[in-house]
Image 1 (tube, helix red, strand yellow):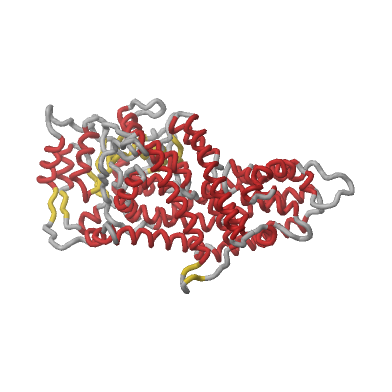
Image 2 (tube, helix red, strand yellow):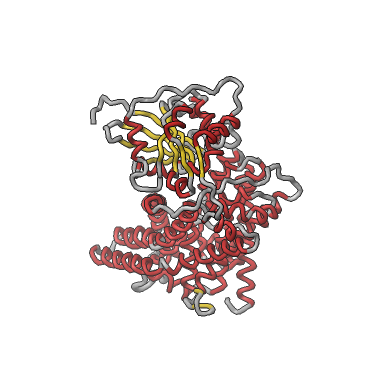
Amino acid sequence: MDASVTTLYAALVGNPNCGKTALFNQLTGSRQKVANYAGVTVERKEGRLVTPGGHPVRLLDLPGAYSLQATSPDEDVTRAVCLGEHSSEPRPQLLICVADATNLRLHLRFVLEIRQLGVPMILVLNMMDEAERRGMTIDIKGLAHELGVPVIPAISVRTGGAARVLEALDAPLPAPPPPLPEGADAHVEVRRILAAFVSSEDLREATLADRLDHWFLHPVIGPLILLIVLFVMFQTVFSWAQPIMDSLESGVAHLGVLVGSLLPDSMLRSLLVDGVIAGAGTVIVYLPQILILFLWILALEESGYLPRAAFLLDRIMAAAGLSGRSFIPLLSSFACAIPGIMAARTIQNPRDRLVTILVAPLMTCSARLPVYTLLIGAFIPQRTVLGVLGLQGLVLFGLYAVAILSGLIVARVMTRGTASAEHPLLLELPAYRVPSLRNLAMGLWQRATIFLSRVGTIIVTLNVLLWALSSFPAPPAGTTGAAIDWSLAGRIGHWMQPVFAPIGFNWQICVSLIPGLAAREVAVSALATVYALGATGDDAAGQLTPLLSAQWSLATALSLLAWYVYAPQCLSTLAVIRRETNSWKFVAGTATYLFALAYGAAFVTYHVARLLGGG
């Protein structure tokens, strides 16, 4: 490529649910980077591509917006970038406005607003395949002439569906479009344009979407279907992942044995086997479960079901003092509380947004999954209930259900006595689509990369630090028992134990709580490191599950499960709450109420389990 060729700076803009991000993925592939805009927790996606004609393009995927009259942080960023008012982002040379071809009555209103900016632009009519299936005919040439901008049909979820967009990027920049006549009403203009250039057959038979919505949005059957979907999702997290997890666990164990056999008995061998492999390897084993959970969330989002679930749960959310707008941020928190908290920026009402942020940490994020899986695998028998349902999956579903119920109760308490100013829930329901394998694969790859980078940085670093704390100082000569008891980590654990003894925690659990402050899943690798260093004979990290089942009581295991339903152990989440609320008061309040709930739930669980014979 000629180094003298100037890079075109373009931005994708459009309403939510128009397929804009799918088009961005299609154009840029893996050449993307994701960060936040300076000063705000609004996601910023930027990608690079080279057109067939050899022209380099820097492409920005702006947050979805319904209007440049911003009512949320997302829309505020989109407005500022389009107008060239953003402090850290120059004004794009070309705006690529993406519209859903099946819903031009809504999307053309925003297209006309973008057209008024006087910036070179092209209009991409996405989902043209769906429009054709619905019997719609769009006069592309006539629409382009009327609007004064190039109009390009596209199918962003199909391979090659963005070829014409690439061709348009090879062409010279179009002239800025002419503005609307003075005093023209945008709504009137939209109706006139639709009447002139868009026609559809009189389809009297119900479409597939109508038939599906009849069941999915039914006031009784709809919630039942949603409950079944969530139940099956948590069952598959165990059943689908188990064979892969067994293979990974075996591989980690063999790696530890191999490294141990190649090195003499020394501190280096202990560091590599007990610190790095025992720690990081124990967490990597749970990657299949995390990816299966993300696969479900991505597939439900791509299929168009998630907005319907939000609409369906509006009444339930109202009982908690919130609106259905809080559902998707809270659902996102099951993957990680951080993007869930960031997603709350789409909630216009400040009270509802704040409460959603404060209860998001109660949703069971994927970082808790390794802890749940470890304890369920060690203490819950692998048997079926009613012949088809796995008991372990039922327990996992129960933990998620308790977290959801607790979140609704806490939200109700927080909103008690205050009225929400949020408008009645109005949602655009996107068309049902078969999820794109490309987008699913890209989403899973990004999540796997993020998880493994955490293993390679945060988790390994913390486990090496924990190994050092657990190995030094050495015990006095002639001392019997485990050397770790004399180490700094052992002493810290023993100092903490009186506080946590009433909920059944031993000193090893207390030690694992400390590195878990950085990331909850580190608690699993911390336990592996502590028990590997404190074990006798040939016990290794690969034997953590049988070690726990042999040394802990059922009451202790259940108490730790209850603790992790509420545990405030994620400094990154608290930091994002600080950025979103701009207040240390809410950070302190969140940490305090979560710790109180965690301790109280663990206390009740431990003592009830002991009374029932689990102690």
